[in-house]
Image (cartoon, rainbow, N blue to C red; front, side, top):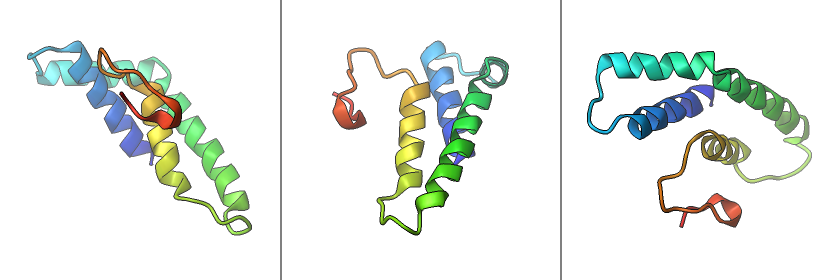
Length: 94
């Protein structure tokens, strides 16, 4: 779960900050920014908290795919939507 969100956020940073020049240096810079900004720690703390809460009630309450929903929520929280789009209720982009 953490790898999926981290990779998506890093790729979003790479493609939103570089127009055409995607070089190894830019990729390493995006990874370094991801770690040093504290975003990685926030994502992983959110995941730990979510997993603890989700599995506490998992067997008592039938639920949708909570893991997938949380991955989507974290990606939407930490990625910048493309210009000209808005996020509507439910997280869909318009």
